[in-house]
Image (cartoon, rainbow, N blue to C red):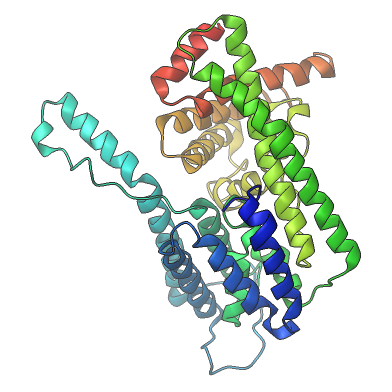
Length: 408
């Protein structure tokens, strides 16, 4: 079920809003959780079990790290001391949370990719008899990349002392499964909505702003993203194109992916406002960026800050010199590329962004072309981003390289 579908706009959403506002305050989170699970399980009810498993594991890991027992302790849960010592039990709880979430993500998202590469390697060695059954494939649950990161960030923040463990399971399940941001982000951290889960306002102004955001997002999707997508599809799937057509198709895809993703974000923010929640923005005019570093401050902000806080900084960040900083950026962007999809195209896309980010950091400048006028910096940055989008859109690596060959 997608936000722009008739099923969602004219059936699910009105019913969800009526039920949500009809419920008493204490039952709103339970009702919203039930609605979110229905939304998520519409395509495949079995996917709800995976979402529930991730939620249950992180809920109990959070309580364990806080030193609390369910139903036995009514004292308020205080945040752990930031930077303080942690017991073996707390470290084990964090490890269980991280391993379980990454295992779910890794199995469902990368099993098919691993099988394909394993079979290709055996074929190159003449060992076809050892290949796995090609009929064995795993269906990818919608949004698993988002809610595993979201749920895992809760456990990490509790361990670091940046968030309080949540005692109420329904509230925590509501946070993880909330349908406005469940299947395509933005990645909402627990500490961003913890206070709102306890108390938030429902006003006509919020509801009206939410409706405006949804209208804007729907217009972006229908009037801008979809037409751009048709142009991109016709060019990328054509048998033979000219250089000008190749650049035109890549440009169309660049705007398609921006309008598509930012449209979903606008609608998610709007739906959140209708339910009384305020979500942070996820895009800030990314194609106005003057460098690749600036681009990642503006594009998919919830993901880039997540990778920064939970991967880049633990790797050492920029504390160990420019060279190590560049290496850290490269590793983070490689994993960020793989997070987007199980394909070598995404790995190479992440590697290119990591290389450009590292090069900017080594040069010690905000931009590789800082001496140029601002409009030229913006144009060159967009050109670099445009080239990397070819790997994002192409069906496979040979197709991407062939397309780039036509562009140049």
